[in-house]
Length: 107
Image (cartoon, rainbow, N blue to C red; front, side, top):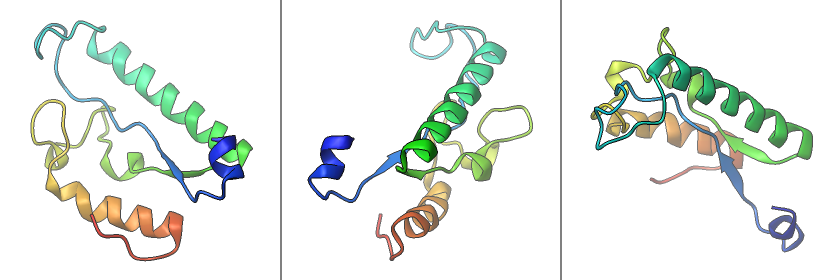
């Protein structure tokens, strides 16, 4: 990232998004951990990455607050399945890119 900055590249870090709602072993053999633990890990990583970017002056694209539900998983209206976002996230992402870079974004 320092090298990119040194080259004059205007970039941003895309922060993690809320976890999906798959349960242990239910999504293509995914066996990371139980869902409550995964929610905690995702949130902690999200917060640490945001703090890292802030303390180093890196731009960050962050759709967490707009897409996380009260249980720590992706809100149902933004899910295409138990893991991936659907197209309803595109306007949120466009707005965030525009906020970060200060101009219109086409996705």
